[in-house]
Length: 91
Image 1 (cartoon, rainbow, N blue to C red):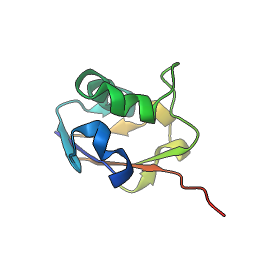
Image 2: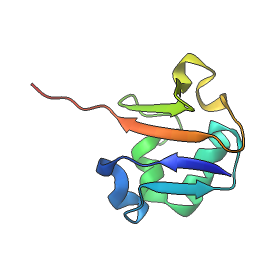
Image 3: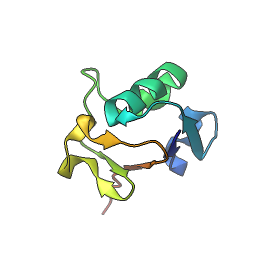
Image 4: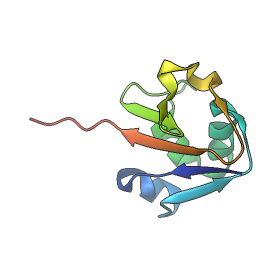
């Protein structure tokens, strides 16, 4: 099992949940594919129409930025925590 931590800004697209328990593991792509199946609106906030991570969304696997790894092909072991953090702009 993998736990996806959902920030407050995206919880409306995850039925209000702050944590999602997922059965998928292996790669970040597999985890997000399960999110797409179960919470398609949330997936659209994380990935674009090509299935790539949106530029303004940061994803961490057990505290490590997936973009410093293999992106969507970054390994996600069973028991991992995946954290989604949308960038915040302001001035």
